Length: 299
Image (tube, rainbow, N blue to C red; front, side):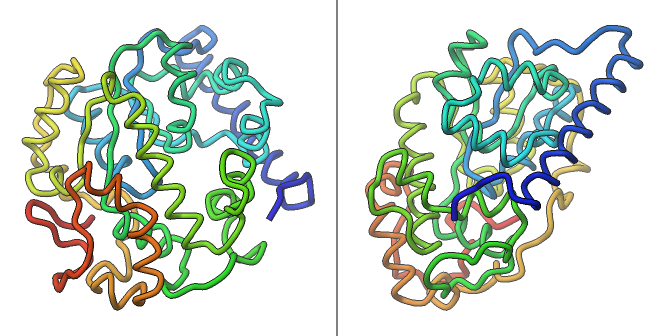
């Protein structure tokens, strides 16, 4: 699955460009000046569907600050340009200066550009959210309405274009693994592993938050995390902690064994095992529902 400027990609890029221009116009009307990237934003990193949205929004509510919860004006084509180094990260930030003007920024794909972001913004502290890979991958498949027992690649056009980029293995092959352009389970396991390795490379600058720990005591964990990030405590978020920020997973109450089947489950755990252990995550056998952990629950 290689991305080119076909009709679907071109239309998405045109819509994204229109949203970006409208956002700039609205910002100029509201603030009387052009948007500029925030000088010291707090970045919320982590894989897609790991809990970054709810955590970023609750941190913003707690601190009384604006938040970018996904860069809504960029296109799949721009991600490809970034990956292929045809667009610099600095230029990308300038193009999307409205999104980067806010003091809290959450966009999972930026995790893979963590080194460049630290250098570009000169920041010393950011947040990394991690979730057990089986639950994380199950949530991604749920979002794309794909079964856990899936084999092989996802056909082009079967999922929204933005998710095709996440489920595509060829970008991993160009980055690091010559055999990585394969079935979607292998791609997603590799993606989780890459995110974990990015964390490991920058651990000294990152506040680590396991989703499972957050889910066990949301208000207290948000307060403690905000303090570690140097964010102010301005609002009581008690009434917001159980809000459903994204659609609830259809299969979250299944055991991972029943959702993935033995073969796919073993492949995920073989790929991710070393990093799982570093985060304190167990492998099967597990008889509890897929989301159950000693101190947590699913979104």
